[in-house]
Image (spheres, rainbow, N blue to C red):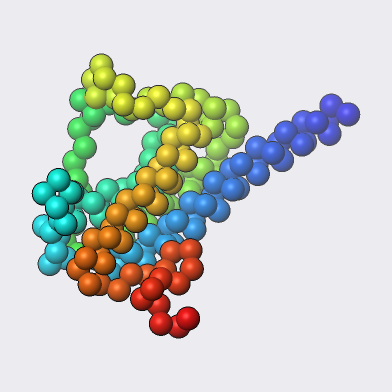
Length: 178
């Protein structure tokens, strides 16, 4: 009886990790389509003075899968002691390479994860100011949610620039196959 319960618990844990891996892969594939069409001549463009410049937005999107590894290999991040430095990007190919690297590393760390890894605490701060205090699982979910959120933001940028938008969870209005 005890063995059966332990096996069910192990299966449940693997189900959570497998579900996260499946979601991470799906969002990676959608995001890759978006980043591949970003026009480099519009890197300094923003739709509004309060909006992020296109380049900063797309580099952030390409960087987000790295947070899966951060969640699983650290207990947090302090921007005061580890300030963010935007990686150099010259082309949409550079963006896709950053995304692919971060996805591969995040996926590899998630494949090695266990329930105890997912339950640990992870804190994002700016010195003494706590910006987020999550479980490692919540940090992974947050990184996936941030990918979706900022990719939708990128979709608005692309639409305003009259660039056809790829489908995400089905065809877009620009997909003429349907």
